[in-house]
Amino acid sequence: MKTDAQLQKDVMDEIKWEPSAKAAQIGVAVANGIVTLNGTVASFAEKWAVEKAAQRVEGVRGIAQEVTIKLLGEHTKTDTEIAEAAVNSLKWHVWVPNDIQATVSQGWITLQGCVNWEYQRSAAKDSVRFMPGVTGVSNDITVKALVEPNGIKDSIEKAFVRNAEIDGGKVRVATSGTTVTLTGKVSSYSEKDQAGIVAWNAPGVNSVCNEIAVA
Image (cartoon, rainbow, N blue to C red; front, side, top):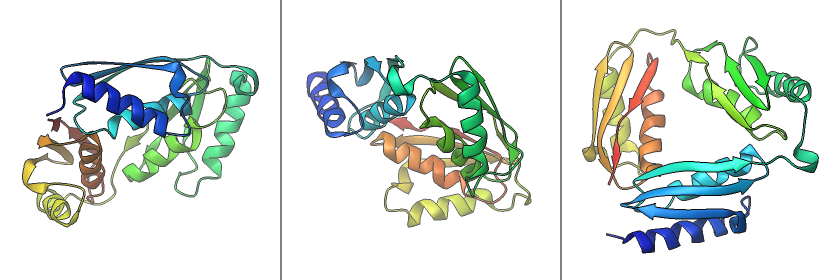
């Protein structure tokens, strides 16, 4: 098991290894496996990249994201400009339905609407979070599956067995109607995220509560 000092070094090295993040502006503190990220970045995309880099490190149990965004130069856009760009970006993404709406306040985008699959919901967020001027994204899009839930628990458990990135024996699946709850323990954030993605892929799922612990 890594000490907090070792974990801090590994996280800092991973952020330095990430070319889309400027490591000199990011501070890393660790206490009992919980990583606190702080500092200033020029875009929401860079903030997201820093967090993803930390999540990739083995031994990270949790992340407190305290990085702030300071827009400068070409990254500075008005809410009107961001809204116009967001509408076009959503329109031109093949996985995003046409009725998704985007509102902008002080650079923060809120997405609303309804889709049939989680991948469509994720695609909508991906299409706008990398734009200049964006300070954050609230994804309020709801998922309402068209198919009736049938054997969701069994299908997810079988998918875990097939997936090389997940130790299916350590993840428990519970279902209540169209809602899936995942519990258990895994060794990394990436494994936890992958388990959530797999669960969302099951036909009929409208909600996934990912309560898996990283240990």
